[in-house]
Length: 470
Image (cartoon, rainbow, N blue to C red; front, side):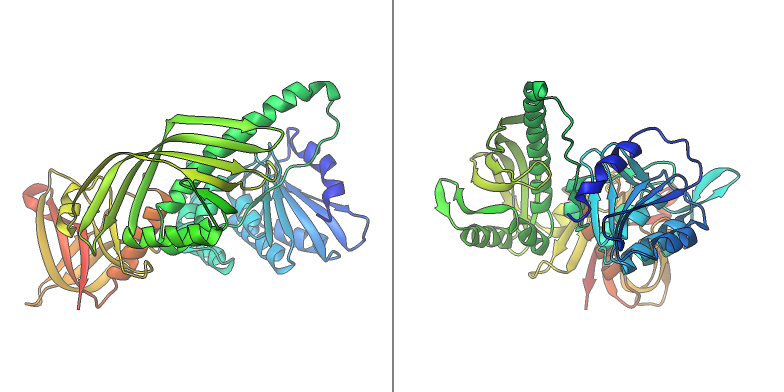
């Protein structure tokens, strides 16, 4: 990178404790007078965006290094817009924290860099009431519009804005990969280490390889549990060429074609690797690792009315070009230990699944139905058929429907609550559930609703399943 020779001192300064209360914006010109490293640290105040614009104006190339616990959201957004407009790079080094408004600015980078031990945190936008942070729907709308302008997906926006302002979601590389948030790891090469530390260095490298391998497997199974188009796009970048695939030497294209056939047969999939079964063996000199373990699977096909669940072993050989880059798969194998197949129907999924369920069309791009949205056994199940005439939206996530008014054939209108617990869902499932609620519950749609009658005399009606009818 063009700035590589200048970052070590800045990184060292940033990992030392800071006492700054307001943001300090420092400029470090590089050899070329049109290039610079810009360091922003401390609390962001409303007027800091004007100071930032003035200080970066002489430079056509810059890397913006960020360290802040947040501050003014509008300042963070405006700084992020300036960064994107000028095509600057953003970077949060290892050991440095960038949260809230700072993270919004970091997202503006034309390239986003983070150290492997960097902390980049997100939560919902808020305003302070009597000193207590309270979520703000208008502020979330402003943040959401900015994130859409950056080209982020709806699933990424939900991830960034859904955490309470009293808490924080810390971005991981695996989450970024799954959500389509483009991020690269970048850490300075420190050459001051003593030659006598080589045994310790070797231990550290092996430890990092083992950690990266475990993270890779977790990410791989999250990706393969997601939408078909996204899974294929991601997997095409993760395989070497050629691959030893279940004992057979195959080209990358042949492997991807095989995977495409499998996911077409099983459009809805969920894989949960059992971390306590992992056995990882890494070679520091070759930057390779072999990882073995077990994974639970649940694959479903509504078209064939079939569901397959069970337990399997897996074995992968991974090759790293560097510790910072995503490895590629050179060997894949495994065997099924347990398998159970049974019929699958929409109604049985509604009553028996342990989590919300989404049914996709043949192209795997549109949600046809949702079920098990409110699995409360104490409520009485019922059904409602009619036309949606009104929607209301969640104050926390502005695009999430939390209530509908349904008009039945005799003209009567009934209000139905929508209360889906998204907190413990994986990113893929959460994204499809949110998208399904938006598309299936549009005003004017005719729907069949499975509902739960709760509360005294069953007067509180809550959606449990949704299927659109023509």
